[in-house]
Length: 276
Length: 194
Image (cartoon, rainbow over all chains, first blue to last red; front, side, top):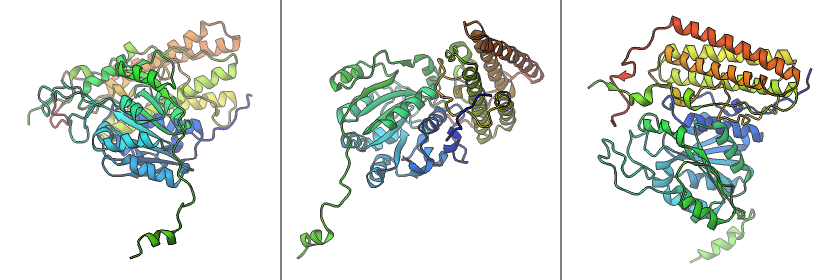
């Protein structure tokens, strides 16, 4: 008989009883699976993890975990997550959402979350479409994507989230693919362990409005380069990126923002400022 | 409302992943115990995925396929338990490292991508068939390696079991109706983007 160590947490330990209402075949199922696998691997107790989101299909994530959760306002996952992490630095904070929520409605928050470099993970499930509202083009939709809601395409250049994240100061930048939930879990685990703001873009097909994205499984490929901590090198890589490189594309060493625990000013002193 | 195909036919036919995905076995560590842990991880991952598929089909109100996936999840769970019993492990091993496969996932694990909300038992069994075929090949490939005799014996035995499962699924497939040509036509489709 072989002696084996007992398991502390399994992915199931992090799943709630609520069944996801995503369309069968949706990439977000794999991302949920990857998140739970990563948390189990890191043996983080569910009560020490918070999942925060905005609005959209992928933003339903908090309901499907039994960690602490906050399903907030459209585009505002990051401010809520930032506030939570600053107030409760002991928690592992994961913000999750989609490309519309994160890059359009929440675009400005994305820039400043990268800049602030608060220690948390931001997972964007990018399917290049607004799925919940029936298929409008999102910031990452290709300019020539033809649909009834965007005849002949928008003609607009896509948003490049990884480049923006690097330029704005994110400390860890990676791309994952929903068709590889184990690889995705590994990246999420690395992101959690890396101090500072960690951004993971997950290519997560929308099988309903973008059925052609099923072909991503033949297009996604491991990045042929090793992770770099040199922003200039990372920038060159990201600017020539084909959009399907999977792996850690930048891992810096910038210290995360940590506010002083004790207030710098006493309330009485503040009151003096407002004395008439 | 005009009846339309719910998604593009090419995308809706859940048959692509078998051709693309070649799951090679991650090299097992030297010992028999490590090999059995790997086998257990494979069965567990397969069972978990079938359960997820069943949940998805339940939510999509496709009860027949949900029941089928639930049954498959139960079968894989039994296989996993059998390994625990065989090894005398009272609890599942902690160091399963679910990211161990050289391919994207374990050989017996179905892909989310292959699901369709209107799929029929035939499609579900096609997924199961491919999974069992990959599992048989996985163990057969280990049995061809230069590994300790205990590992080779176990790998051969498991490859044989998986081949039996292939035949069982084939029999099962023969008993379910083949889908009609327009199985994915939905009178009230979610997608108006075509």
